[in-house]
Every structure is written in structure tokens, then in C-alpha cells.
Image (cartoon, rainbow, N blue to C red):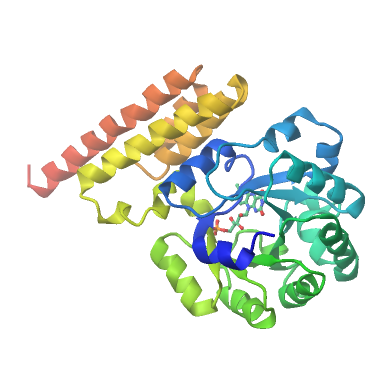
Length: 330
Ligand SMILES: Cc1cc2nc3c(=O)[nH]c(=O)nc-3n(C[C@H](O)[C@H](O)[C@H](O)COP(=O)(O)O)c2cc1C
């Protein structure tokens, strides 16, 4: 069986799963930029075994170079086991169980972060998965359900004891959602409690941050989520060393390749939505981003969206010229 220890040593920094963003095209681009192996967005086990068409699209395989981790959401072994077997048959090399999703409609059904509440019941689910699968089984957890039940260490120990091969920790609690700083000391506590590899996650925005998280917590690897949206080149150690023109050229190429992959791999309707979403992420934080976003989402075709996005360069140039003019006392 694939060794998670070796794989994580070879993949110190990787893209985190993000629903509606980290589909195949984005994962291919992140890998090309230097991300370690990637994890699919969350796939609902109940919907998958009902042959829901949209869910099947999420479970589709792409030409990724590295092992493929596929993530499942579920609340019982009755659906998680057959769904996991189906994903393995379709090509998944690793099965990851989502134990951190805080979305109310997910936790109400006992899925995502709700799995951290009843540790005994979750142990039985994970043991059933472990017995059924011959690929690594991993979990992604939060710090706990809420600030009164920060039980990441207890859950990690239980997971290790039922044979889970690796754990990712996003240390905020479910009730914290994404507010406040991620308390990295919870990652260090989990690292100290188990002898299986731990991936740390939360508020990492650069390779330097990732190295700092590894040094401060002892985690074996790091996952980067939001900071990689519209900035997949953050996985590329060369990017920050390039001169501004070469850097801009590399970024333009990444965006163009990403759009081409979206058109190649997604059905037309989905491709248009994805292209707009990803272009809005690439434009975020830049000059005129808010206005650009509105225009992007009204675009009728991918070509039109791309033309709107490319005008962003002109907007940036105009504002730079204005700034330079002010600085020069013009
Ligand atoms: C839009 C969005 C979608 C997400 N979807 C998932 C998901 O499908 N599965 C999962 O385990 N985590 C999901 N997450 C959580 C991230 O993987 C990650 O744990 C979290 O964003 C903290 O890391 P960051 O500070 O690097 O963003 C999502 C986060 C965001 C912002």
C-alpha cells in the first residue's frame, strides 16, 4: 500500500480541498505550479451511490501526475463504504473522510464536522472503511465542534487506533468557521499525540509560512486553501524570485493554461461558470476587482470573460501610470 509517510515527505506543501473550486482543472494547474498531490472537493457519499449526475462529475478522474486523493462526506458506513469502493475503482489512490465541513445543511445530516461529536460512532465508521479498503485512509478534522469541545487530540488518537493512515488538521472549531486566527498550537498537540503523519492547515499564505508552520508544530506537511485561490503560483518556489515582467508572464501563462483545461475537461455549462469564478479569483485584490467581478459574471462566453479579465491589465497599467505620475510630482 502507498506509504503516506513517504508521500507526505515528497509533498510538503499541497492544495487543500475547496468545494466548487478545486476541481480537476485547478488541481492539474496547482500540480504544475508545484503543489504536492491534491484532494478532490468533498463528494457526498449518499448522492454518489444514488448515481447523482452532478456528483459523478465531481468523482471524475483527471490526468493528474501524482496520487489522487478523493474526499467523501457521509454519516454512516452503509453509504461511505460503497462510495469509497466506487471511488477506488474509478482511480482514487487515497480516500479522505471530511470531518471538518461546518456548513449547517451538512452537519445537520450528521456529516462533516458532526463526525467529531460522537467519537465512538465515528470510530466504527472509520474501522469499517479501513477493513473494506486496500488504499490509504485519511481524515481531515477541525479543532473540535465548538470552543467547549476542542477534541482534535481525542479524535486523532481514536483514528490512529482504528488504522487511519494520516490526518489533516484545520485547527479552528466548527463554530469558529473561518473567523479569527487558526490556532496552530492545536496542530502541534495532535502531532505530539499520534505516530501517524499530520498535515497542518490554516492561514498559510506562502511557502515561507508553510515552512514556519512545519517548524512551529512539527507537522509533516502543509495544506494551503484560500491563499491559493487565484494564486496557484504560490506553490512555485521560483515565482517569488522572478523579475516583475517574467513573473507577470508566468502568471499570464498559468491563467491561459487553466482556462484551456477548464474548456477541455468540463461540460460547457459548468466550464463557463468555472471560468468566471476562477477569473474572478485571479482578479481579486487587484485594481477595479469589484467592478470587474460584476462584468465577468455577466459574460455570455468563456472568450468574453477572458477578454474582460485581460482588460484588467490595462486597468492596472492605467492606475500604475497615475501612481507613478503622482510619485514623480506630475
Ligand atoms: C470555498 C471553500 C470550500 C471548502 N471546501 C472544502 C471541502 O470540500 N473539503 C474540506 O475538507 N475542506 C474544505 N474547505 C476548507 C479548506 O480545505 C481549509 O481547511 C480552510 O480553508 C483553512 O485553510 P486556509 O486558511 O489555507 O484557507 C473549504 C474552504 C473554502 C474557503
